[in-house]
Length: 75
Image 1: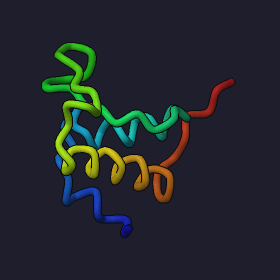
Image 2: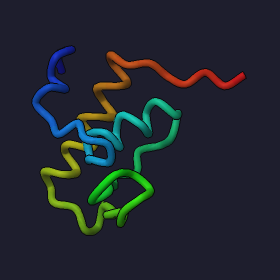
Image 3: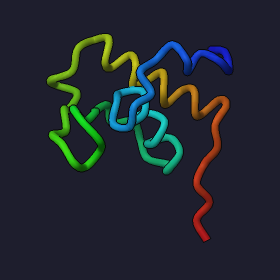
Image 4: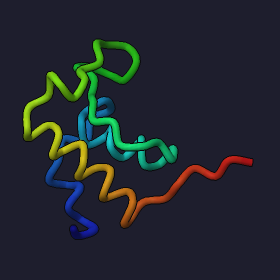
């Protein structure tokens, strides 16, 4: 994975890639999912209802943040 690879994904808030980034950032375990619209304001799509590409995009977001992103620091 390369630093600029994130440009190849749908980065909208709630997308599979975005949810992967977010789960990694907040130290959560992998739980592939996404939202049809903005997170928490629309229906959540769980992994069982995701396409292989959507799961791949989620994992790419998680992996990208693990490699290049940062993590929330809890006080």
